[in-house]
Length: 310
Image (tube, rainbow, N blue to C red; front, side, top):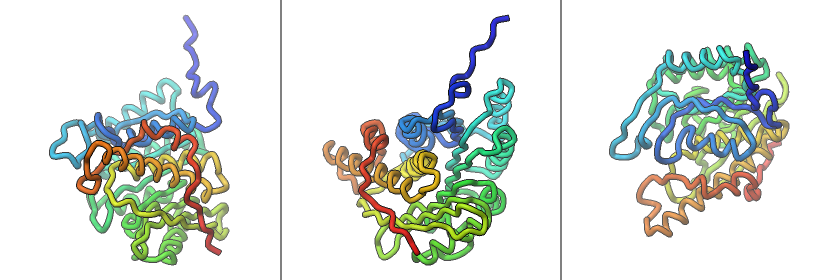
């Protein structure tokens, strides 16, 4: 019998890693896996996407059509990979998840992947809501807090989500740092609050606890607000944080500088292109210009610096 050819991403692994990304998918536009897979590939990663939903377009349009994957169907895919010895991953990335049953299956996936690679890095964007509005069922909040946070390696919540996960109001830098410490105590060694509005300025707050009981290295990046609303930016930001933090494992601040600088370049190009097309970018949500921004993803000039807290 002819010998089966090797899977080259396993036989000749890249220096970066092999990522399993479980997120939503749209045929048109860039959200979920469409926002995450391409940038990670540009940064040198092999990425295997599982699409938790497949929609014609994102749900901000007047209508959308498509299918939703359930937990049993997700597990079917995992079993198929396992049957062919294809379940070795260095990273797991998850974004928007719409039901508690699907999230429970994701937890099974984490355990399965770690049984094969105990060093698996799980990067979790706990997508639950924004600006005080919850857009997942309430039972997901406790599932994230009690089951997902303890097994995550890196968490990337926004301001509202970090409040849901910690049960505390987060309105200042001091609050943000305290919230990071609470999350470290629960499990993840890296926490990045990706967007906090403080005094009408956008802040990113990052925290890296390099060893149990050690004082975390903490920093902030102040980012100018672009007067427009975009879809897919959180998915892109988390993917960039995964990509750069793996290249700079001991310097989360540097990774965040690169991720923020990339993202801001993509957003500026997006606004400029809508204006070029004669559209006022402040009147609707905008689809990001990902393909046109390849160089800004691969080699971003650092424009935004991390300021360390003492």
